Structures are given as structure tokens and as C-alpha cells.
Image (cartoon, rainbow, N blue to C red; front, side, top):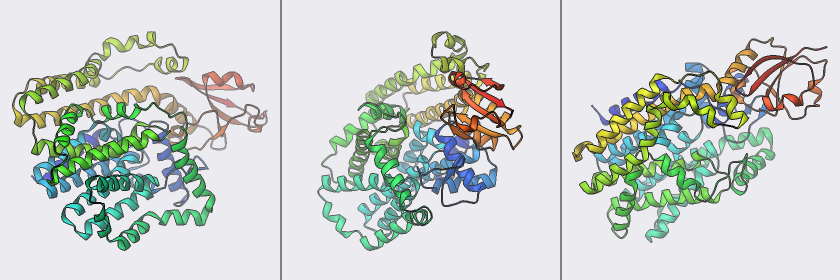
Length: 529
């Protein structure tokens, strides 16, 4: 069987059956999915809009992909997440190609399998957000740079420029800043910065602007220069200088995120970095790529640590570097048995607590409400939701696989056993635990969406101090967010439905009928008097 076909089958089994099991999660998934849907319904393909309002945070490249999936497979969670899943596959296939060119087919297979089975790769591949798509193009840019540096082929330099241009059209300046910073630092530290002069600059710049600029030109023509101010100054520079929407973190925030993101392969990384240090003066291509990957990982963490707004997926562009460096290490510098045992012991210590929690869910979950005191969390957890037996089953299978990894002493089976462990970990988390968690977090908004769907279309829908795009996505109705309880929209001569949290109910003085109360949310109805 060709390696690419086997890899595609692995991806299909790991992603497609569980891609739409859980509903879309508020806020990021639903706002992107709703933006794509609103643009499609309004045949508005230049100005992003969500819930009747302009949404200038991101360019619409990924929205177009979602819209194509909506047309093919319907307006649902599966379609919204399909672009992320597909570009995760494309990333794995490109790593297969890259590994084959730089070190042989075995290295390519290892790189691709590791990338597919990294925990955060799986998370983003099952999420309707932009990062899985962005990460593919950043990988293509830096992978093309690697190939250009090794073989000095003009086409690889041109592909690097194309990839950076597309990355800018997906998420803005970060698509250029990350790969350029890594390339410049690598050239300076290697003492070969003069090689940058040999880049076909005119052709590369032309291709970059051809791929990066079309939508920006169109949006400025439609909206004027005010858009660029909001997009650049607020949603890019503003996010870097100030924490937005409460998303801040300490200096070690991304170190902790990294440790979780690369599970179950984390315990291998110290050996990879030690080998990179030992090979720091070696001129072999494999040693140079290891150094480049370390630069890649460190720079991404440092850049986003300096930035004030922090979210776990911001550093996900380093995941290909983990896969590349670990794949090269396993093929060329496979560790000794004592080192392997240390890696297996460390992996067991890292994963065993999570696996035990999954396998024993029925024992401890009924007692959770006794340990929680926050009113909103208590309202969510008090919903009548029963854990699925599949969560426990997946935990048991994970435990058995972990024990096999721990006690297996045959080097030839080590890599395969880790891939199987990672495979089962993703199925357990995204195929069984995520749908269960969604019943709590998304259950109230889905119930409200269904109630709104059944209302007369002429009834206005308002939301008080609350923005949950899932309600709009699943009801097919836009709602207006109101911040003042004395807003004229609340007048007695108006008929409207109102969404709000339990703690805001006392702020509304109009006589209202309660249509639904669930999980800390309420849907009220006021009839014109």
C-alpha cells in the first residue's frame, strides 16, 4: 500500500467518524461557523458578517472553505470542521513528502504519523477555527525553505513565497511574521545570511502579494481604510499589546500549553533537544534541520509569550517542527534501551492520571456537584446528563495500551505502540469525552435555539449581556445584543424573546413569560401590551 494512501486511511478513521459528534462550541467555533453561514446566505463574499454585524477579526479565506462544505454536506458541525480536518491531512501528506525528500520514506512516514497524533493537532483538526488551515501554509512555507536551502531549487523559494502570501490571507500578518522570523534567525545563527541574497526576490515578492493582497484590496474598496485600522491596530497590534477579552497569562503559560499540546510524545523531546545540542556544529543536513526546528519552537513560544493576549492555539504553528525533529531523531538517532525505558516511564506518569479519570468516570462524576460552589458552574453541572459508557471503555483501552507501551521491550514496536496510544487518546477525548462535555456546555444554548426556531419569525430576538453565536447558528435566527435594561427595545409595546443568564434576570422589570430555563440560561417572552 502506498504510504500516502495508508496515511489518508489513518486520518479518515481518526477524524471523519467523530468530526460532527459534538455540536459547535461557543465562542470561537460558533462565531467562525456563523460568519461563514451569514456570508453564504447573504451572498456577501467580501465583508465578513456575523449575526447582522461586521466581523473584521479575520480574513474570509477559511469562511469560503466552510461555505463549500455547507453546500456539499449541509449546515452543520461536520461541515464547519471539515476544512480543519482536511488541512490537517494535507499537513501530514506534506510532511510525508518533505521527509522523503530530505531523508527517505521512513522518515516521512514517521513525521506524518507523529504530526497526526499530536494532541493539539487532533484538537485543531476537530475544531471549526482557522489554525489548522493556517498551520498547513506555515508548514509549507518553512518546508519549502528547508528544501530550497538543501537543493537550491527556484521552485521551492517560489512555493515559500506563495505559502506565506496565503497564510496572510488566512489570519493576517502572523502568516508572514512567524516564517520570516524563523528564516532570518536561522540564517544569522548559521552564519549563512548572505545566502538570502540568492532568493529570486522579484518573483517571490510578486507571488507573495498576488496571494496575500486580493481580499485586502477588495475590502478597502468596499469599506474604506477604516477597516485596515480596525484589523491591524485593534485585532493584531492591539492583541499583542493588551490582553483582549480577558485572555492573559503568566510568562510560563505557553510552556504549560506546549507540554499538553505534544502529548503523548512529550517525553521524547528532551532526547531530541539533547541530540540537537550535540550536533550543534555538525554540517549534516539532518543536524541542521534539527537546529532549525528548535529555533522554530523557541521563537514561536517567545513571540507569543511577549504578546499580551494568550490562547492555547496561538503557538500551534510549532507542531510541525515537533513532528519533523522527532521523526528525524527516531530515524537517525534512535535512543538506547535505558533511555527508552525512561521515556516510557515518563509517558506513563504523564498520561496515567487522565486515563484513570476516564476509566473511573462513573465513580467520581456524580459527586462533582458537591465540590463545585460557583453558581454558574453549578447550574451547568446540575443538568440531567449521564456519562456515556464509551468514555469508560475508551479509558480502559487506553490503559491497556499504555501498559503495553510500558512493558514492551522490542525496539521495532516502540514507534507503532506510541502511534496507537496517541490514536486512542484522541478518540477518547474527541470522540467520547467532547460530546459528553458538549451536553453540559452547549445543551442550554441548543435548547434555546430550538425554542427560537419554533417562534413566529416576526418576533424579535434579543440577548441581554450575552453573545452565544451557537444560538444563531442552530436556530437560523439573528439576535440583537442589548447592554442596557432600559433600552427602548424592551418597551412594553414590543413583542420579543429575550435570552439572558440567571444572574441578570432581576435586571429586567417587564413582565415576562419563561419559555425555558436550563443550565444557567433563560429564554423569556414578552408580548406587546
